Image 1 (cartoon, rainbow, N blue to C red):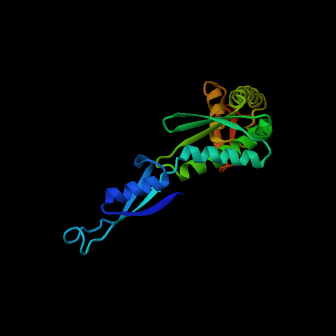
Image 2 (image 1 turned 180 degrees about the vertical axis):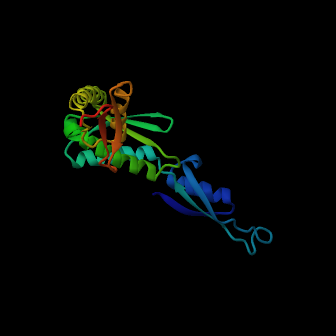
Image 3 (image 1 turned 30 degrees about the horizontal axis):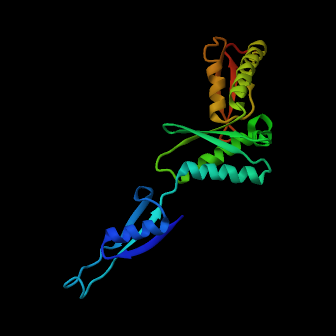
Length: 209
């Protein structure tokens, strides 16, 4: 975090001095007035300079981008990132020659990175932001796979008359399963377990004894 303490004959002059040292603008900083100063008699005797502390605001999205860059380099899979923000949702699209390392088996590495990136971005944000990581259109491909899986396991539940539990998934993947089977009249879905090991259970309406 960049910050300086500066003085001046007035608060405004002290702030201008701090901004010059930080090489930034006032809208990108937080200003704390430590001492408003005192002009004194004839502007000389008993005067006291104004003192301010100016801190550069941290951009939560840039902090998240820096985090992703650092982690990917540490994993030996450097990336480029594109950022798209829509209200409180921030979407990072990752590209790189070794992007498969960041996706991992069934997207587990990507999901972990997404969780950690969300922690980083919300540590510096004034409002809660939802992070969404994607790489090589993996999320759309994964969604199609989950929908197919949901229907296949629903048929299994109907045929056997028994509950079918899926592997643990993040909340947005569980939502895909629930939505895919929402109009199925012979099964119902529910979530069980505790985060981060929460999973979907597909139950037949008519169970076999």
